Image (cartoon, rainbow over all chains, first blue to last red; front, top):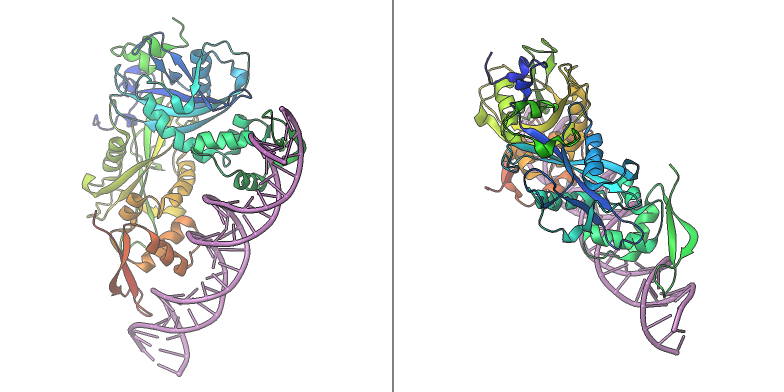
Length: 227
Length: 227
DNA sequence: ATAATAGTGTCTGTCAGACATTATGCG
DNA sequence: CGCATAATGTCTGACAGACACTATTAT
């Protein structure tokens, strides 16, 4: 048996086999867009141990044996950001980063994921910064954020689970404008956005109007259909 | 230190740490579309060892420590399909599959990749089947193919590296119709496809005409601009 | 009234699908 | 000529960007 093909004779009981692999970490781009946030916020935390100790980083964990990616993504959020599990509204997969030297401890893949965090009593274990103003982070995390932003922008108004989790089930039209502006960069035409939203299945405008700025015409309230 | 956060105290010299992770395999959707192929062919091979021995499967290997995903994808193609490395024209990442029970040896992630195989003296170590007629395969490989097809269809005419590798640098328009029909399902309107191709940067039609069917008008030859 | 904000309507150009028409070859 | 195949042209509807106009509120 050639060493070229370890998978064929892999003995699952022998940890040395699998130890010949790169490690796998899950790093999460955790977003929130609460009522009093006026931009999309990114959750980061100061590293308490390991390399880059004391530096800011995305919440991440080593993949646990037998775990689903989404579950380990949630675990990263809970343990590193201090966010209660119930506040994690949605999770999804992005891409895998494979630069061999991205982690000083040795070769480590990073499977990037996105998550949306709902409102909860903030224990401030996490640091929340505007998504477009993230500071210098540990590892290649700034690169992860950069590449993820385009993917997240594409999800807005197309991935309904993502969008609904981020903006909520009921929201004034103005919120939609702001959210789109942040993720896509540059404010959208409000008329065009209204048109696009009205064509979305599962989303409709209500008769309710709401005042968001102290002056001016109140905004219409949009709502996702109950699931 | 909680066992919840093994990444923080991970000692790279200790293989037992990383052995607590799921294994990671690279499984490749290897495609070819040679001159005498009249559909896109998928490369599969009979498993000679391990679980599902004797069954057909996508070429796959265990991720090797410190390797780039693309390099290990190429290694899977070389070792499992017998394709010379020089014939691998392009490789790219698709998605990661994480069902914990997809491999009987234990929890194993599968990072799915695509690859395009160029013409070479076929040693017939590989079995080539039409992409839309793949037989029952080992593991969850049929599912991988199903989910990959949509992604591959989206890459056609948008991911130029993928498209160019698959159809070649010079090709009659009829080939483009056939390729699009296979990947997208259902033949495209030839007029619309011509229009789309003429708008593609890096692709242009030549004055050359070529007979592909024995009867009828000869087809125009299209060519990618030299890189 | 005026300013500030929100929503509507319209015009434009782009683009994809569909289809009819023309072109090029062979027997 | 008739047949098979390939290419062109045109029509339509969907849709996005841009922008002008109208609507609703506070001061």
